[in-house]
Length: 392
Ligand code: NDP
Ligand code: MG
Image (cartoon, rainbow, N blue to C red; front, top):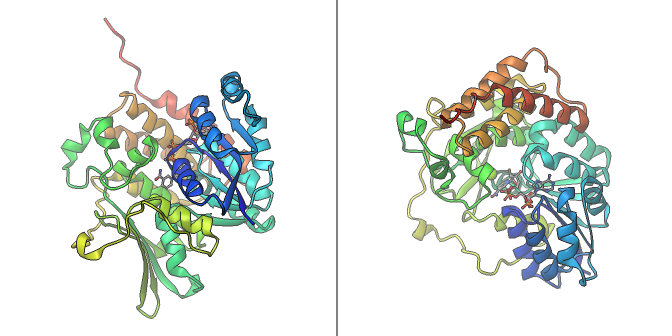
């Protein structure tokens, strides 16, 4: 019997890697629903290939274009928040949660509340409302499978072992495009330079976060919630080849690690397999001799202050990760449109964390509270950006 898979964020980088795997295994999977943001043409094209039961776009104004593109196909579709929720509510054995940013919280949480098996790429869900997500996953009997490569590697390295027996978990960072750059050069970096990831092919936002190492900070917070492990037992090491993704250091000195070529289809396939491994066609297997050498170095928090800021937010707890994430999303989009320099990202995020430290001491109790904090901090952060320069 085939498994029904719903993909939230189907037109994105993770979404397309997922679709590739689904297409490689037509007998094993069928597609329940596909959800996108605003790109009607791209979503309709995917739907034409995959023949899902239902297709939804978050952007209501793109509804007519989607309807038009799907006319004659018989594929039910809709646009706006209610349509996205209808897509999530459709029967599915696995929901791949790959919307980018805080926009992913509601649909991902809705899938958890239905007790679904959720392959979680949207790390913001755990960063913004990790306590609530983990509590509700347990309460509604949902399974959370980590798609993020480091966490997927950790889950595989942990196996049936107990977190109580773990001395430390280490996630690796490629170091991003600025790993070898000095601070002055990083300060003048352009969005194109920041988006040029050395090893992974990903969406724009996560590329910039990888260049600042904020992505690693978000991943420490993600690991803290997923594995219920304290910040003191979590560690980052820079590994430019991106082949070792996560390591579990046991208290007896043994270390188990997850290795794979940097290809997001590997962790996604692990999630979709539900314990029964999938074959990946056109994947590159790991050849250690060809890889030659695997190197490791300490992460430099002086040149990459976002990692320091994220560690502090994790340590301080409460809603500080929620605050940090919201400010970072505003800062990254300001950097992409050229409104602030690269270190302006860390500067804005740090100012937001300092500004809201007293106000948001306690962790959000639920998604609504997390999104209210998120909206408040976004407004503050947008207002705290430098005034745009006027022409003439
Ligand atoms: P992309 O930007 O490539 O894709 C985002 C997807 O979300 C698109 O399908 C987009 O649709 C859709 N979307 C945007 N806004 C909404 C909304 N409001 N409601 C519903 N759908 C929406 O992102 P990535 O695939 O790179 O990342 C997705 C998530 O996975 C992120 O949380 C990221 O941190 C995480 N992740 C990504 C990795 C990667 O390798 N890319 C690795 C590990 C984690 P549209 O195209 O129409 O805008
Ligand atoms: Mg990752």
